[in-house]
Amino acid sequence: MGVIGIVLVSLFGCFTFGFNVVRFSREDLRASQILQEKMEAIRLYTWKQLNQTNFVNTSFTAPAGLTGTSYFYGKVEILDNSASGFPVTNTYAKNLRLVKVSLTWTNNGMVRTRETSTFVSQYGLQNYIYN
Image (cartoon, one colour):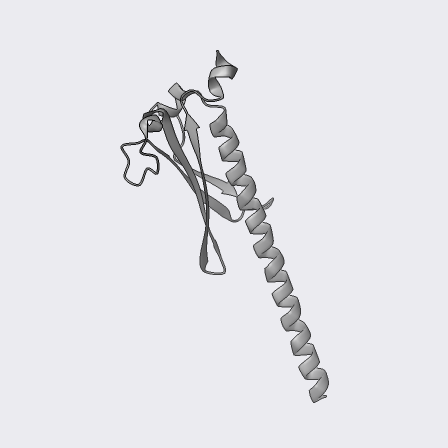
């Protein structure tokens, strides 16, 4: 009986660990999808729209799954060369914007975050699309 009890407790622990790994993987995948979606939307903005105040939503929420009971909370930052920590200091810096998208969510009381960033150029892809 003791051996069976130890085996059952161990089996229960393994299942719990496996389900947690699957849940963490799903959340990471969903976070990656949301970050990619936001970056793809940024690619479609013109330079004027990107620099326009309040054109880009700086905060957003996205459902974590189909049930909609938990959410990812996101933030979009658009930094120019006057911002502290802007990584480009050459003459092209005034023609660049650094776009950062970050997500935060809570899982089992633990706050988790993901972030991605990219540069957008004034004379980039948008000029070929919109002109």
